[in-house]
Image (cartoon, rainbow, N blue to C red; front, top):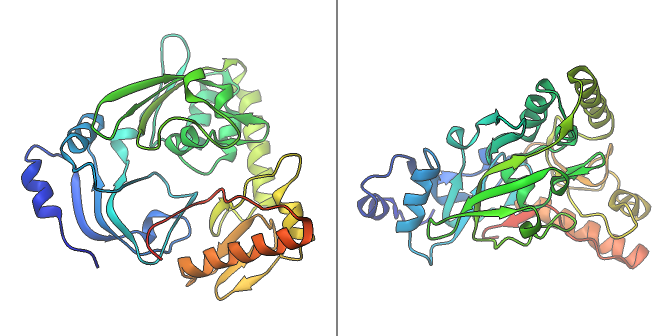
Length: 304
């Protein structure tokens, strides 16, 4: 448990409309369903509320932003600082007058894909294969099934650590493989996407194909964090892991998925330490077998 700093925050932010919680459990916030407490959990009401909070927050206080928690492992010692969970106030999805999609950072990728499909906007179907929110997809240039955020983004909006509003064009995002060059302190709040004209039925059929492919090849209904490691240049991480004999490797309740060995699975009571240690063991075996050092794709944060 951490020191309760919420009384001081509430005193310094009398007009705050969002919810502040002290020593809140973080396990429910991530798909792994494990991890220690957050010293402060803040759920802002909307962008203005978040800007107000940031403008009055001590700049030395660590901040972690969470969406659906699909690509996140919070260590067992928890997060000393503020965890900001973007909720309903950041989940709106709309089609504008130019038939472009405007989506909040907390909008699930799959819902954005569906809104686009129903509006007859092609090119966003790949979002069906990304188990997260738009904010995370912006931060890491999320991609799957032949598409990436860089292919469809017009503009991203966000807030700096001081609460200042900022905007970035596609070029200014500095996209590379699973990475954007925007400073880590920026919290994305909204994105504008552009696709191309298409037939809703054809687009929905493409999404259904992606759904079936995920269900048949990935452990989608388990406690997992999605793809664990980035694909090295010209190689597939899962193939390297498989060749190193790691398929099904287990530490306690943490296991390398039998179905797709670039996924780690919590079978019920695995600690964050066990999951991370299993990942490091996989990295060690792959390095010994192939000479390639796998790079984590899952974000690991907090105290051990």
